[in-house]
Length: 306
Image (cartoon, rainbow, N blue to C red):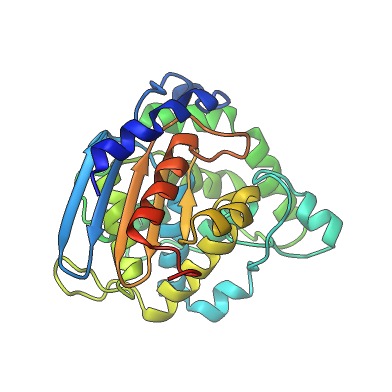
């Protein structure tokens, strides 16, 4: 398929969303951007179009990386003891899911409470801070040594992240988060402020779709168990309250971030990275999801259909 034509077909969707204004640094991002990168692991072919090399804040897509790293460091059993795999039915930054269900742990790893808890599980090792480990692992699994920390976005998150502070203190009050809140939130805010491209995310998706093995050099970066678990959670909770809707529309494990990024893993076939910063009410890229839906249909990627 012609990716440039696909971008043109979905361009008008940008006007249906808006950038994430609640984070001041993200409010300044030009909404009129749309890019895609495809990594076909079956024949090592790549294709890209539009703003595929523009750097943007990874935001909640980082939750995929941190979850994978936590599983590799601690084991799946330990991670499953801390977070569930259930849909919440509530926005990503609320504690209502735990309050109403009387759960003692976050319902999944991709809502903010779950992601903050996952980050808090990573302890200093060999003199490396938790974020330094996540940062190094991100560069490796995204095959992108140019990933950087955007200090402006980090400071913006730090200044305006009161909702995330409330989530962290709630978890601490419930006896779930057993670490210093400010220190753990520093890690979380920094992981969200890493700068990536569509290509970075396509590489991440390619590792997931290739059962944990990097298709660019044959190295196993994560276990098959970690890849399978994470793709399953991406399918059921990766797009927040719209996860069920897009399981039907797209049928590909996907995770979004409020920076406008999407990472998808079409099993045994494609790693996909998409960027477009104008978001819908749930926090997902409007034009990005339209483009992903079109690509999924054209390339027959829906795992429930083909």
